[in-house]
Length: 222
Image (cartoon, rainbow, N blue to C red; front, side, top):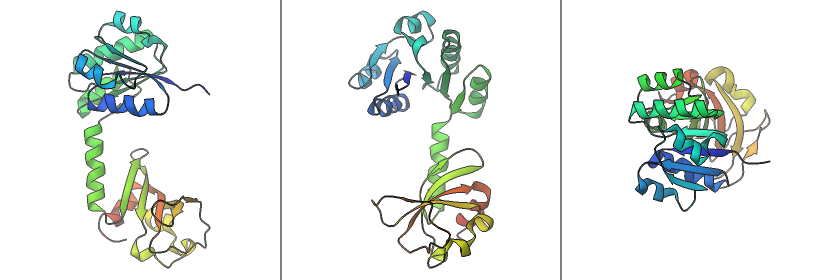
């Protein structure tokens, strides 16, 4: 299956990291920035690395941005630039647009003018780190939406030696077990049986209902 193609508009740390990661998965990536230093940052791995003004639709058209599957507006500081970039991408018919915003107001504006998704990476990373600091057990977590997260955690002491069916995790804590890793570096065992007994060294991959899980985990009740 053909990999999707991406245009990354803005090649600061956020944009260049996205470009590099996509390139590592053999995706076609066009990196665009007005600053040649930023362009040079991605020139070794991007399919195209172009110095251009992405608020100018003619420059975007000349680069071939209208042919990409996804565009990422990775500059979040100047609202006017982000707005112009999104309007240009909509005019060019780009199917999916993800944009970066520095605050909630910018986020709402960018969604209203046509961005399909807007992220606030500093806020999201801050929340993620704070949750890891609050938790004794969490290894990593990814929010699915405001209600649910996928989380990897060390088996809480209160669960050790008990079978999943007896723990009744979904009812008590809003937790569904997706898989178990016996030791760091080992492969994940998907969908353990109801009679599986949790061991002290287990690492658990779970989907959690945030409100219920946080009541127990972050208050040290697990």
